[in-house]
Structures are given as C-alpha cells and as structure tokens.
Image (cartoon, rainbow, N blue to C red; front, side, top):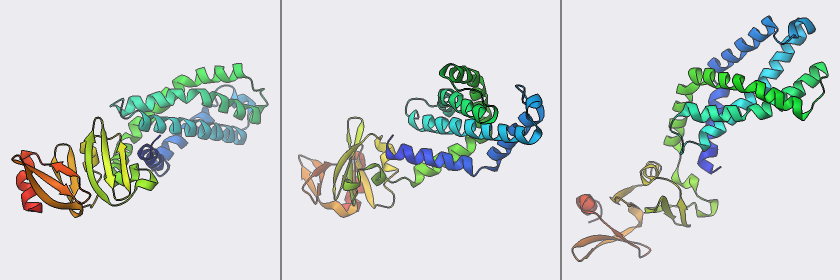
Length: 256
C-alpha cells in the first residue's frame, strides 16, 4: 500500500469513528440482538451477560469488517469505479477472520472449543451478515466517506508520494508513459499517477503547465529559447522543456 492509499484508509477510518450515525446504527443492532436473544442466547444467558456477549461480538466483527472494507476501498480504487463494490469485496473477505474471532468470543463466554472446522463454519455463516453490514453501512455512511476522501485529495501534496530522500522543492513534472516524473531539488522519482491528478497536488508552488506533458515551477525557469521556430524553456539545471502552441502566449507573458 502506497503512502496516499494509507492516508485515504486512515481518513476513512476516522470518518467512521467520529460519526454519530455509525455509532447509532451499531448500538441499535446490538440492542436488537440483546432483546431478541437469537441463537439460544435468550435461554442460556441472563440479560447482563447477553448484553456483554453481543456488544463484544459485534464490536469485534464490525471492527474487522470496517478495516477490510476501508482497505479494499483504498486498494481497489483504480480498478473499480463503484465504492459500494469495493467495500463489498472487503466486507466479504472479512468473513474469514470474523469467523475465527467469533470462535474466540464463544470460547470466552460459553467455553465452546475452538477448531478450524467450527471457525470456517462460522465464517460461512458470517458471509450474508457481512454483506448486510456493508449494505447498511454504505447507505448510512457513503456520503461522509466520499466527502472525507475528496478532502484528502485536496489536501494531499505530490511530495507526500515521494520517498523521504527525494522530498525537496518542487521543480517540474513530466509525463513518462503511465507515470508522472516528479523532479525536486533533492532528486527525481516516477509516481504512478495521472498527470492531471498530479497537477492538482502541486499545492501552493507557483508554476505553469507549458505542455500537455510538462509543468514547471516559476523559480526554476532560467530563460526562453527558440529552436527551429519552437519555443523551449531552459531550466536552471540545463534541461530544455518544450512549449506547445496552446501555451506559448501564457509562457511569454509569464517568463518572457
């Protein structure tokens, strides 16, 4: 997982933990299980123990499902457009660790032996519940998650995507196949990022897009140069950056 995906994951987790709607839904589900006492818990457990059992079981299961859903949302964002399906995949994968976690809770409260077969059985049983959890969570939380993700995109700096040793003053950006080459005062690095997205992450660095494949920082421009009728930008490190016709007037006003 790259740095930006990790940031996105942490931001989404924060959206969950601070949401009154999420906690309200969680407590409502717990109370429903406590009052109805499914799976024999009404007969086998007094009210206090039943409340503790379902509270701990749901807290563990929901935490695992949320972690897997949020990680899947971050990791699959480039492959799947719909947030719902990204979260659903993560939630269904979470059924396996949830099955083992439920086994531990059952052992703590009822002394049921833990085995691989019983844990796998619980995991299969948890699959439809995980799907239902994802559906309910998406209905109640998707707008808040999308808003949080949008805020993250606005606040992310292109420098955050670089290795620490390459983070310096931003000098220029260039397209290299499916990558964006980021050149700083401390080095250069290829980042798997669309050029248009990279331009949104330059922050407050003064600069100008001079070509569909190039952006330059104002402070790193040395002069303009004409070569066979074409305008080139001479950078302070000696690099020559072509200027496309659609940007010539802007470049002349800015650097001429």
